[in-house]
Image (spheres, helix red, strand yellow):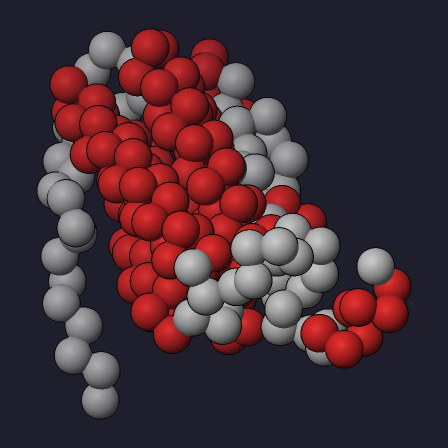
Length: 206
């Protein structure tokens, strides 16, 4: 049996209904730089990561991103749980309401549904870790944009926590990239996939 602790990583206690804010925040659930794509990215990449410690880091951060997704879902839910039909119409939330009522469904703020095309898992350590660094920066930028637009402190506090975690993850992936570089031949790690190509085959083509 799972021993699931029913507690968010950071408390979410939003008391005011605001479907417009929910429509913005939902991008960090199912948008291109959201928590769902981040967790899927890292938990997929970990299997082919050649450095054991880096694979462990991907597992840890990928799992934490699932907790962040749970926070985003809680925020969207709390912002819409007392939603009225008139609220939905006024805020432009009516199209979402027609498709999903008040249930949670992964999409971007613009309404585009979540797609696995929004992340990559290449099986090349340098490629994957470079993408991970970019992913954390893009997510931080989204949180910056949300914080510029949202004034409610009940919404801002969990968003500020999530933004801080993006910065920490970026730092950890930077360290992971340097650690991985240290295990590869500095003369050729940008020119072949060390997890797939054999050095003898590489020399024939260079």
